[in-house]
Length: 159
Image 1 (cartoon, rainbow, N blue to C red):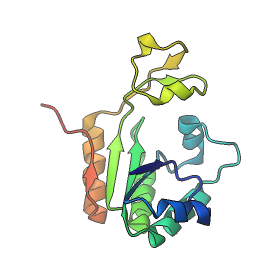
Image 2: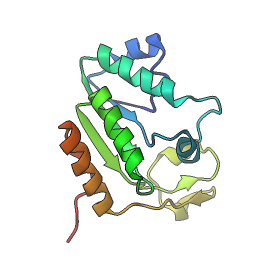
Image 3: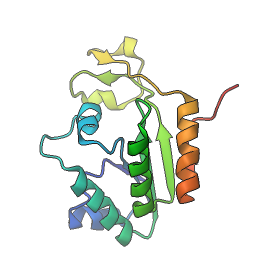
């Protein structure tokens, strides 16, 4: 299983290397370049259209299981949801995973920030990210599944 942020999927060598995996999960946290810059802090010249084209090319070449992982920090507007659903129909992943943040975000890049640590034990400053409710995740998951037929996993509703 490989988890990728998808930024290099437009590179044929990267796609070829990933086809050796049995399962690839592509991180796609937003459909807005502004939100992508705020959430993921990518290199300045990153282009969402290139990422989307790379995902589409990879999907066409990959015979294994591909999933899309999306972390929601805030409820999306109707237009953003519709565009995401359109992209999922285009990419045709085997599964979509809707997530919320589970660990604090380092204020500056920290290699150690990739692990699951409590914010009290960290030697660097972090920001605790907001989470959307499980109700928001569930409603969006149902809308995605109804429009695409793709299985969507997310946190269950708690009573």
